[in-house]
Length: 243
Image (cartoon, rainbow, N blue to C red; front, side):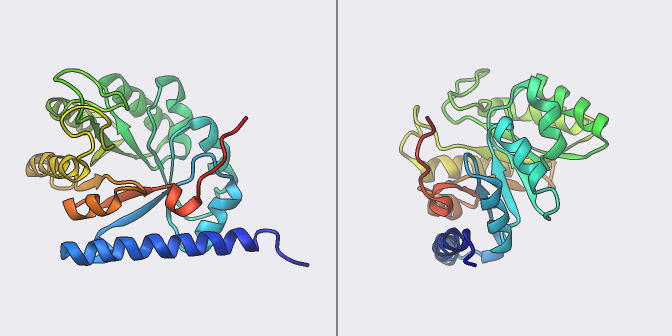
């Protein structure tokens, strides 16, 4: 009997190989070691069967941006040694569910979310990694269109995570902005994030994770110094819109 997933497995293997080549080439061009950049595959809208195939193919970091998709998928793949990243804008009413499976929340952008995550992590007896999401299109004291805190809000959030039981400050994340001075200037945006990371690491050397770059701009992120890239479409393909 033929394996119905064989075709999908070979498709994912080819896509992963192409992405791997791109990351390796970007690392070589930047004079960085390949092992200094971690690939996170963003599996949103794709089924648990794809996650299992990705695991077979060596992927160990996966990301989701909606709890209603992520929670059942994580449960279906609970037997796999995966690190789950939550990368979407997170409402406090979803925090308890997300803390049940996520190892890292990359989208921490307000104090209320820090206290909610801390309470849920404590209740679950877990330590949760947190990245402060930085919005490079936000004015002082505001949040960005795609979530995130303005650069001058990083320190306040970092201090709150540091002080919160059950949470661990791992670093910074950004999404290349669609508006503002960095729109269309991904490399400059990611270099700005690296500058902000340097400031953060001066007082918190273990908060050294820098999550930036997606399918279209991973080379710019690697060149700037990102430690983690979040790749969806280039690995999984373009999924037809639901409905």
